[in-house]
Length: 256
Image 1 (cartoon, rainbow, N blue to C red):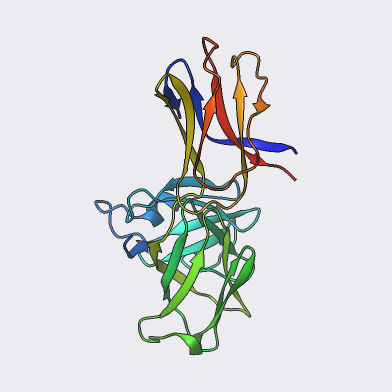
Image 2 (cartoon, helix red, strand yellow):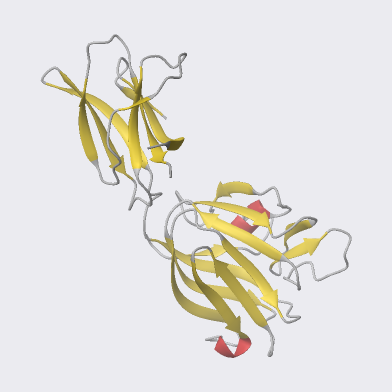
């Protein structure tokens, strides 16, 4: 049994402390200088990517990057698009070969995608990691005059979605209507005493997406972590040896 990089909290036995929805339209176009949007925070992001808060939904974070080298996300008062450096393309839309990758730190449901400049015979695609994506021809739009389509797509936390066009289409994005339906799927640790007995408890933020292992270390300087639990993916509690003056605990993803 191996372990990947640690996830969640590190708990100190001595200190007894951890170190550590409703639907809303996530606005991707710019509005004005006095009204920042999520799109404004993603403006100029390139292939290296960036993570920021979702302005319209408190407690939700989004990670974004452009779809390839030499591309950057471009946000205007019209819509969000992707620009290739030095190319004279439509800066407020997705052209052939341009893409944007998004993921959220919590499970979300996509209720609606609001486009801009979606014309007949054009197609927009949303590829979703690990599951069937959306191929959206203009004919499938629920409201062709307003350029939007209603959807019902559940996207797990940290799942990447690639947005792009195909077949010579040139389409911009105005926003994505989301509902937060779950947490991060990651565990948080806490430590406490019960009748003189030390206990480490784990509580998951939403439905877990993988198994974890609880590890213990006598001193952080030694960086020697020993597994003290079997793999788990549900909330739990462990009695620990409280004879040492100090001790640290962490949860790590179970490796292959």
